[in-house]
Every structure is written in structure tokens, then in C-alpha cells.
Amino acid sequence: MLKFLAGLVLGLAAAYAHVAWGPSGLSIFEIPDRLRGNLISSATESVLYDLDQPLEKRQRALEVLFQNRPAFAARVDSEFGNAFLRNLYRRRALREARELRLGWRAFDEALAKPALRAALERKHGTADTSALKRAMLMQAFRRKPFLVQWVARNVGPVREEALLDMLTRLSRQEAPAR
Image (cartoon, rainbow, N blue to C red; front, top):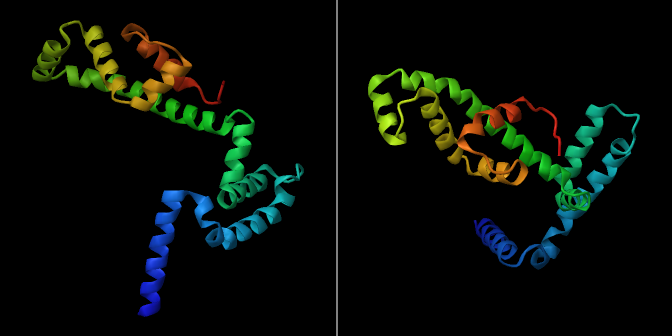
């Protein structure tokens, strides 16, 4: 029981020190993990850098590298313009754009309900179906802060009238363009 409590206290202290002072404050505690990680990632380098290996094997070796040497992987990404990070963001933006685009059809169902339509007409100040749907889409878009930021940085300002077209173009993209 005493060993358990001592281990628990040491673990909590180590976690607190890591958060408070960063990895340099725990370098002695991290040596075994770093050594293990470096050995494992070194062992996978023969597959990772062998261009004759099937892509699936090289991707698995890359996963092992990310698991065992995450700081190195992040540093490599940074050295080459954060391509991984940019594509990660682009992937999320495309997914969120597709979700919003799919919601466009659901607006017809909402507007088919007289009481709900009346409330939406009052809220948005119009009885025109197209204008209501655009206003509802803009409202849904604004509830996606990541997508709003990503669009502002990568597409530019978007007017309510152009939002559906922009989301349609984004939702059709598969491969990263930037």
C-alpha cells in the first residue's frame, strides 16, 4: 500500500512539474520513454525510407514515428511550412462545409411547418423562402467558429448570398489545394 501511495504521489508530482515547467523540468523521468521511442522509430526507419516498400507499410512506419517521436514529427512539419497542420485544418473545414451544405435541404422541411416558418420569418425579417434559407445557412455557418476562421483566412469574406456557392465548392473538394 505504501508503494502504491508513493508511486501515486510521485506520478502526480511529475505530471504537475511537466505542466508547470515543461519537458525540460522532467528530463530525467523522460529518458526511458525517449530512449524507447528513439529505438522503436529507428527500427522503423528502414521501412519508412525504403521507397520500394508498399505505401501502406510506409504509412504505418510514419504512424510509429508520430507515436514515438511526436516532437520530431512536429518539427519536420514546421520546417516544411506546416503542410500536415494545414491539411489537417483543410480536412476539418471541408467536413464542416459538407455538413452545412447537407443542412440546406433540411431547411425546406423546417420551412414547411407553418408555426416554425412564421417564427423564422419574424426572426430574419423576410417571407421569401430563398432569403430565409440563406439567413438560416448563415446562422448555422456562424455557429461553426473553426470554419468561419478558416474561410476568412483561406477564402476571404463571404456574403450571405454567396455562402451556399462557396460551401458547395468546398464540399466538392477532396484533395488539398493549398
